[in-house]
Image (tube, rainbow, N blue to C red):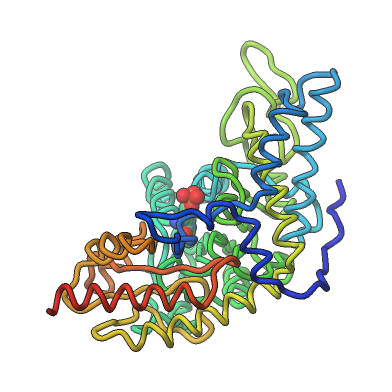
Length: 417
Ligand code: PMP
């Protein structure tokens, strides 16, 4: 299999035209125009993804890899073509390195099972950071229950920035897996994946990257990053839910046993034994999320038509403006202020509980996230139970932050009189 050539976009960035592609963004909530600032949880979908989903069911639908009839072949072709699109997006050299899963959570569990069960044993260590999403923590705990390994977490600095020397001091001769976020879903910190992957390899470990909040906001080149696995979820990248990616190096995949057993992942089956298909199908048991995968393909076409550099520049401008606008709100404290941060702005508002903030501003049509963001260790690290979080996507505009700031001022007036 060969990847599609990496797409370079030369068209100029047209924020209004991009926004118009998202039907939900012209709807109202509580009689107010929707201001959607919760894309880190899940992004909205452009019309072309909705159309691709509909066409997958109304024009080419049949099960994949199974039939020799017209529709099965059309469905299989459309489905398999997405591997090439993913490979092009992250610059993987072979689409066969792209394994389809149900999401980043499944991808990380797959790695913990297939790699962890094979190569880790009693006393071995998985090194993570305190800034992980639970999806990059709990699978390693479950691995520990199976094989006796330990999960060790390195801290971040108070401002959310990352200190490579501190991280290094947590590596031991027992470290077998280093699993890090590309970008923290709470702090927005961009982790130096290239340096961490090099460090992992110098110490005989592999580097697993939770790219959920990375690939959505910036160009990714897995070869350049030098990591061994890179995972993400389609629903955060303008695609459907139920489809995720687990990219891994082909030499690593080649040596791993299957994750789940069933149809599609076999070579030959006897009643008392089976042999398995080559990667990627070895790791894809059962009927996959066919239409959702095709929808993800349309989402990748969407971001590539904009260009990941242009998308990043637009979002970085929004983030700078958002920080500036929110800094003027009385009593607002930012959680995570690392230089170059991406995607999210987490904050607290003096004595107002984040749940109250979110509920109150929802009345103004403003959607943000409030809670622990599936990052309880990080909340504990900061001595918090929750934060409020505004997150950006390519369809947001500066005025969304004007609206958020105005709405937060209203919350202040309600609580402070
Ligand atoms: N990692 C990070 C950094 C995330 O933000 C998320 C989703 N909030 C996940 C992992 C898990 O993704 P999913 O629930 O789509 O599997």
